[in-house]
Image 1: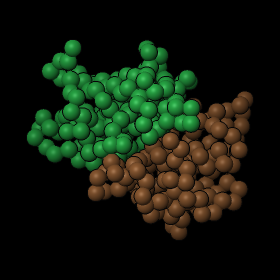
Image 2: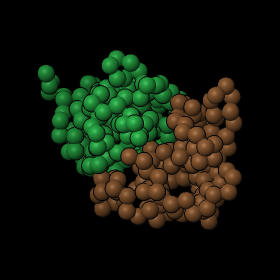
Image 3: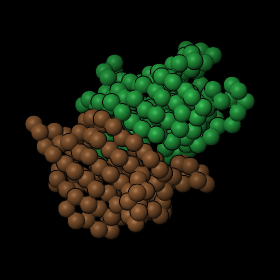
Image 4: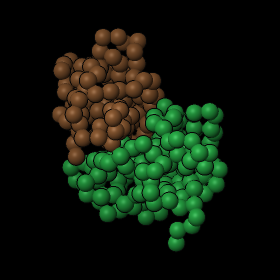
Length: 141
Length: 117
């Protein structure tokens, strides 16, 4: 059941457009945490030859989850959504098996710090309750 | 979808060093970003992985990214130099990589410390 803080119109909050929109559902939980999901479609651009998602795609999904959070916060302040970039990725572990088409990525992002246009996050992505990626990321927007 | 030959061309490859030419027309630039094409950072990571696989003649994937720093943007049309160091321990390949402008190696785009298997 969508709550008031669940959004579906993801593209209002991020500058990315198809074919690289990697968030489908987003929930703003509070000032320091959010949740997102993506069901992997057959035309996703981050699939390998066996139709498994590669880790790079999951990292993009995590970065865009943070981007939606940043865009959501900016909209709350009546500011425009702007371009964002990954500054760094650290302490990232990737656990097999990688998910395939039809499976759903579920991601929790915690905002570690936000100073001006630099946001530090920690993130965990799960599929069927199993952790497949966790990492820290720095984003600039 | 495999990126190879769509995102970039390998202009030169000698041992652990590559010269790469970013193509202008990859599908991803339609959305990243409209009217302002920038190569997604994660796709430069994918490019590094593909070049590592070229060196070791395997089909490796990332299992750990200890540290990956993006210093400057990669854009379509950029000509880049990629230097890779690999070492193998217990079936895990540790990979260090440095991506720079092909003509100016002080113009660093990406520095990576990772493991693949």
